[in-house]
Length: 378
Image (cartoon, rainbow, N blue to C red; front, side, top):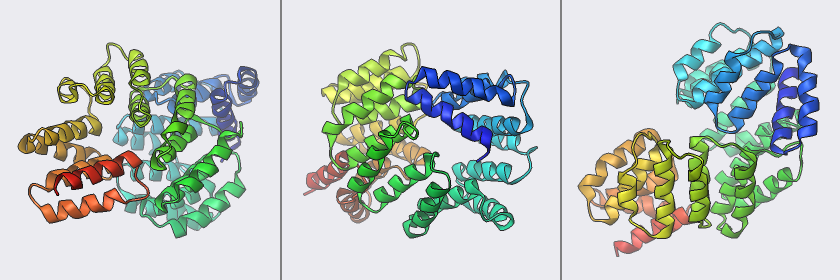
């Protein structure tokens, strides 16, 4: 990681820790890279808060930066565009850049575009020239985890953590490895230690910890971390949806409605209210049917699940397909798809639900959903 990247990372961490004096000092130090360096830090913080549009606004105002900082600015622009689903534009931003950092950033975009072979080729190119390149090694570990190859990923992640102890990404990936191994409690202990370290704590790590609590069926532990994220971060729409889904695990419709209040007049507001209505036991199907303008897998998955519960299998199928197109590997989508498959291919649907009902890396609520679907068929 470049020294400028490290300086920006420190601003992100101090912002999450709500330490304004430290943030002010760190931002002043950034000026040695140019008078607009603070805008790059603003963009990085906006990305942490799931606000890629705000990140682009900050980056569009950047004019005067040293070359190293300009390169970081371009890579953050690519990250923002990728978060917004504008992957081709992200690749175009990276195309004029050269060198290992640019190649690694391009590999990251290709991975998000589900083009792992091309991403792997770029990472191998970087590592052949420089086997110590930190970001490329991290990319290699992430690719290994995406294939479920924990044995290959863990030694890489341990080495990355040792080489750059202030970057939270290896720690987060190690927690994911514990999750894949079905060892949620080890992941929880690992991340709880990180949140006690002000140099490593972040909203992303808090959300990772909340996910592990949900997997471990420790709903009583969720409010503290969820309240911290909600309080410290000015969340964007997709971040708000994930927060609301985690608040459903508590369950707390009041917290979800509080989040929804920040999005009055926006399309995502209706989705958040529908999630609150689910918790309250109201007419969730009608609520989700009124959600418009939100192209998110959850809308279709929830509609499919409620239509199946109402015995409307044919009406559910288009929503199952739409959810699978948007998030084919998401557990909730797979469970609802399996429940739908019970009507057309009972053996395959039953087998998928049995797997989900005992899968140690799924949320406890998802395991229960799978078990309930199986029980309903007996």
